[in-house]
Image 1: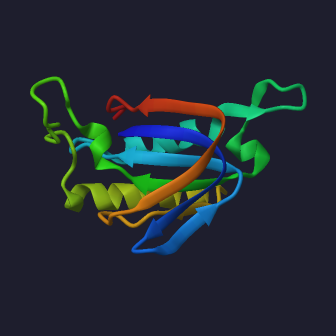
Image 2 (image 1 turned 120 degrees about the vertical axis):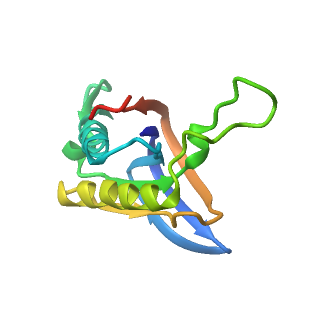
Length: 149
């Protein structure tokens, strides 16, 4: 699994002109699922993301996690994170999982975050979405499980 994690003051997903979901202070997670990913990859990534100390403490140092601030998470499926652009001009998406694998792992990721106490909103898997956010900091991180299973 690959994820782009952005610290936000607010964010939303709009589908067909209607706001589908929104969050306030927290993290936007753009999540790409590879065909060989498992629940272990999702478990690792959820734990890592919610415990990253990337929010500022009272002294302005990044020392507090999403769990500590009781922030929200907006998880958006993003198969294009798996685009391989090394050859040619068109990305290859051969590493992206087919929906029959990706949807259950995406749903599992969201369920795990929720079960661990993170208020979690989503986009809609496979939909054309407009994601709007205010990146706070800005803070943006790239995470890859490298198949921890």
